[in-house]
Length: 494
Image (tube, rainbow, N blue to C red; front, side, top):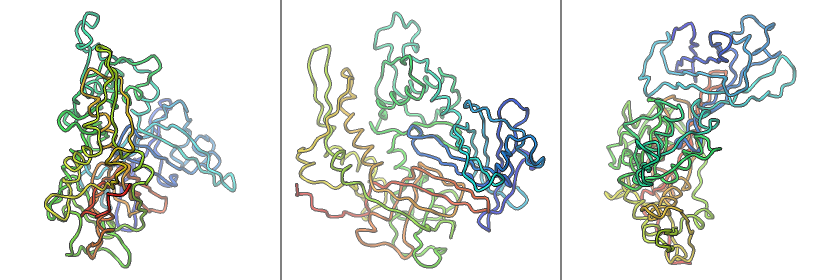
């Protein structure tokens, strides 16, 4: 991309970033470049779980006298003579990366460049005091997600056999991970799977899209029955920004790459952050921290003041969620062949859940002892004596899926409904969800509260927010399912 189409801007007073923003209605010839003078605000929201929401955001542009589409307005405004299609085909391409003052690359694009192809999904006309100060906000999301939501799916596992009309029901089945890949391919969403990180799953499924089902509907259904092939663990459909493809890997795979040795952060511990209470947190201390510490340029990154948490909100798991969802989930089904009801309770109980959570997740993170961290789950007799249960149902009776359905729900709730932190921090483009953010206090951490508040947090959402005046912030939401040490809360109460 030539420098003629790139704006170089000083960000936060000390970093240079290159911006390229273009809009295309596929009608008027070349895409129209939006200059930084016309952009008031840009927000890109990256999410860990693709099915809970794709990469999306909004772009607020100057639109005095309807400048975006007004042929007669300022001839120097680069986006003039653009006409919005408003049919889900207005394309928006955004590329942002750190550079030096001459616009040359200074860091690895794989790690530090934000680049997406979006579709404009909605438009808002921002209220203003006069017609010359109007602004328009363009809401966008991932272009392939748009295809998934709008297209009726044409997919069946039966087409995986050479002679589907003669095949048995068993032959018409596919492993759930393979079915997800085939669903995308059959619906012309090609080259969107990163094969090196795509779990095949442990169960086979016989499935055909309904007449009204979208590709997104199919993916939601198939993911409901997907468990990892080895750990029988919850898997996350995640978009890898560097590969521009989807991955499907178990949660335990992410946790195993976080690190559980005090001086050996793992590959996925992306950054070491510090709370700012007083003064400037620019120097890393030598006290005891509750996350592995070994500052590097590719992991456990620390950027001084840019790695200092300015303001945060912190909440524990909601008591109602814990009482309703962190209980045994026995699963029942009906065996049509033998005309019997079956109930599967052993793997779906609260005790098994804690064992798996410790094995798959918390033991792979740093704790006070060599055994790793402790599950951040509070028990009581109502839970352990099964005086409160959450009964699950599944029509699948001819495979092992009912053995693990309740456990899957427990594991998902135990991670993503656990304690949560949301914080503001000076912006940096390397931050992505699906990586761990080590959070500590500069003078070290001690006590029960610190055991919960400090440590390795799994990022689930990262917002990149750019304002017109050269200010760039990240707003990050992360979850934590482990405690650095045992909290010692009494479990013998009702």
